[in-house]
Amino acid sequence: MAKSRENQMSEIKNFSEVPVFNNEAEEANFWDHHGLGNDLLAELKPFNIENNIEQYILENLRILPLDKQQEVLDFTEFLRQKIV
Image 1: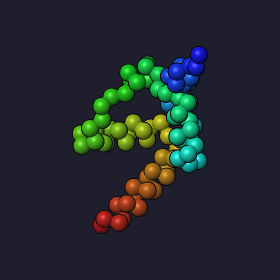
Image 2: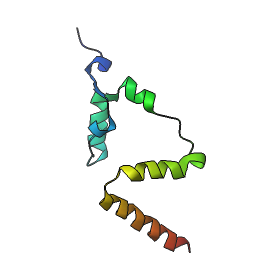
Image 3: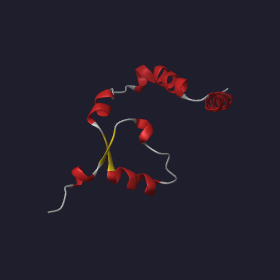
C-alpha cells in the first residue's frame, strides 16, 4: 500500500532548516518533500504591510550578520538617491 504524500513529507521545525535555493526548480523540489510543522505554523502572524513594515524590517535586520546589515543600508541609500 502506497504512503500518502503527507506521510512522506519532512516537517520543517525551524526556518533555519530551509536552504538557500539556486533556482525555482530546486525550491519546488524541496517544498514537494517538506512542509512547515504545526509549531512553526502557529508562530506565524498575519502581516499587514501598511501597519508593520518598519517593525518587520527592523526585526529581520537585527538577525542579519553585520556585513548583510551593511548591504541593506547601502541598498536603502541607493533607493533614496533614486527618489531625491
